[in-house]
Image (cartoon, rainbow, N blue to C red; front, top):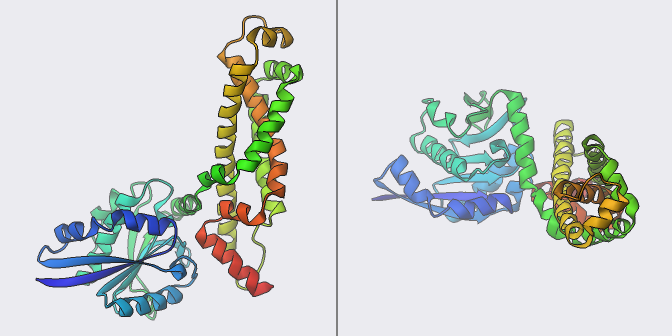
Length: 362
């Protein structure tokens, strides 16, 4: 039985995590889906350049070196970089001459992607194994139901790529790209990183809860006012974090306008989700606190309620306290360690990009 060795070159963080999760399943899936008479072997190598280089040539050159060092037959790069072909958003591309391909995780969107990565991996291996140009549309409909995939042959003279799979229509592909890059930044990690800010915010909220004025306001505020205050608090914290820690990417000698705009959009979406996670955690803490420590009878008396205090009144009070505390927490976010905040806002890819641009222009 012949043997084919495939190298999976993963960028750090999310691509590496997904690769480790699916690596043991790939040989059997490939054997069943492509050729059971071949012994398939898949290995992982984690390479930083796969998650930082912005041109196909850089990634391909690095992949060629790694492929030769490990004596692989095929090499597939799994990156969290956005890939473009002019205005098209690329899910994957293949170089038949070098037997090297790339898969862009952001093109999969925000939703769980391991099963779709496996299907894409098998599809690419089949392409390289058979080196055929036969189009197989049905294979792509299920994993990308809301953003169909189009298979195109790269223009003559494009040495790095022979086949591309691009997202259509472009507006759907762009949304998937932003959501996918946001997911790679792991906005939920703010909870563990921002413990000091949560402590500051909770202390502020707990202090104002001592005074009946907040109780009266929570009873008087309509849901429109509570929602508006919540949005003001969340947006204030996002804007304060961006401006105080220089997270907005400006013009740089090495920065392309399209990528700069994309990364700024991802920074905003990442911080919005991160602060919303933070807001929800803070709300839960305040809801438990007011439920245990605010006497219902006193609450009803001070807030001039018509009837007894119910769960709705406690929710409104916790909601208002959370918004006030978030406004105070935005000040705490401004004085937090800049590297810590950048690690929350940026994933590995974007952090390394920032450092390279900064060094280039400093």
